[in-house]
Picture: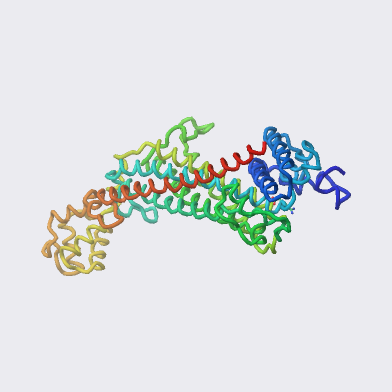
Length: 487
Ligand code: ARG
């Protein structure tokens, strides 16, 4: 047998079983990362004297050749990319040299280092895309800080608000998502390398050096924890699931709002689909898929939680099954954030319909009850009953309201201080919104203030993102410089 992994301990293999064991397909994602890990590891081995400088140079040259050939030149009959790359290296430089690369490490620390390297980039890309989406939202929110629309509870007309205030609500949820992405990034960007199988190694290695060469911010210190935890994967997918949940709520609104009955927005043609039989149809398929893919990401999270629960220390092959769900959930989330950005920045807003709709369903009832309290001194609960009775009777005038007042409290509200002007003011939707100027409310001035604050914070968040991106790039540059000095 010439399989470099199995030839010692095992005498037999079966292609069907090997294929069942294999992670080669999913490992496509970590091809480049694995070469980086190999590079940092062999440089450290040379620096600490485990291999010679010459051996290091030969190995690094071999790794360059493998990199040039790409994933597709690898022998995919191996059970994973780590062993396939090692086999290829031995084929290129011979076992006397190539066979030294795996000294002082295991695939257990290797694979989790690779996952962390790829995931940290995905998280930074996601953060960048989320920031772009939030910027788009803030721009549309500014333009629509006075665009009146119905606010809903239970999907029933509740009180008037503005589209600016509504979009800001979505923005703020995504702002919290950004904080969560950053938290996941900080805990992902740690080096487990040097933990070997789980018990570290008796070789004189330098974990700090490989950490530095790979641009990680700190170590996953305990070597047993380092190889066996996938909590950083659970954390990232749960962050993805949260983002998807927030975006699916936006998607649901796009679907509802673009239907004939609502008619509040129209999606751009590029984000719509049509019917193969009904020529008139313009369907919000992108938003529907955003909604559906949320379920897929939730499924990834459930899978990873179920796979990792109750695994004994330390490495178990079950962990291999986790990784596919991670890349799947990450790709879906990144794609969905892009689509959401596109949908909202290209949609047509039907301002007339929005304001018309804001005026229906007696959405000013709360303000009328509040006005009764403020002008007549009645308790809110009593005003609530009076206005509720008014709504039930489909009543619109102060005169008729007075009749209800007589029935319920034996007094006319107009005798108690509620004049025609106050009555009309309470029923005016624009006035309703303007009066809600307390912190966080929909009054245009307050929405403006909130948008300004958020734009200011966004600039700081971009700085933080750039700092992390630069740290990663500096790390990669440092690794490449050291590598070049050996080539
Ligand atoms: N393909 C494996 C994974 O993704 C790599 C580690 C295998 N380690 C082992 N001891 N079998 O987890």
